[in-house]
Amino acid sequence: LYCGPFFSSAVMAGYALERFADDAAKTERLPQIADGSIRATLVLDDLNHPSQVGRLIAADQAGALTGSAPIVLDGCSAEVFFIVAREDSGLGLYALAAKAPGAEVSAQDSIDMTRKVARVTLQEAAGTRIGSVTPQSLSRFWDLTSVALAHEMIGGASRLLDETVEYTKGRYQFGRPIGSFQALKHRCADLLMNLEFAKAATQHAGFCLAASDQETIYPSMAKAMAADCFMEMARAAIQLRGGIGFTWENDTHLWFKRAKCDEVLLGAPYRHRARMMDILQETQDVA
Image 1 (cartoon, rainbow, N blue to C red):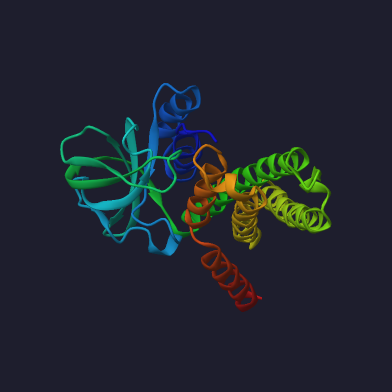
Image 2 (image 1 turned 90 degrees about the vertical axis):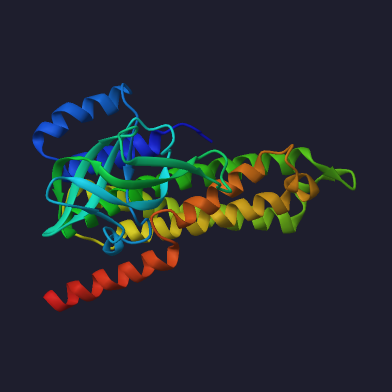
């Protein structure tokens, strides 16, 4: 469980610059994010669905930003905010120093202690416009970050399964390892099967994104399947450990909390399945 700002800075802020920013901003900012000389985070006023972004934060013609984002990953440790804000003609991308006048950052409680979140409130904060955000580019950004998050969840589920299998081999009951009991062996086999299905979907989604810019259902499919898999693995890891799985002395509870937060980050599974249906319907209408 990595507690640093990799996903917020390298993934979310990096993809936002790559998809939305102008060439000058990319040239200046992307190398800084890549080498870690700055910590950036993306400020979105909604993390559930791309169609809902831009409702709470607005920019006037002078670039003054007003509004709030309830959940910002690593907002308290970021040095630079990249903010998607509503404009008269659509959405724009703005850069703002985290300690700029008019910007207030407050830490928020989260069940996941390994990934910090904050609330960002803006009151006529003077941002610098560095790009435009179209519905197509925002949807593509959502696909890219969802697949990146799905890969994280697959990695977490794999680690949980490996540690759980090792635990069942070393935990003895009635004079034999509990992993030798048929019920537990079948449970672990089912977990492995679900993991392989989700892993295949995630890898295919990444291949589709690398191969084409066309909108596809596979990123949302991967996010939904990986989230379900990670949560099921976390629940099973606690149950298969018995009483020790519920204690703070065992790290399994940290994995469970990360799984729960990742499940809803960028949209819960039901939202991504609904998004898949919307994309399929649009494809059929065009055909």
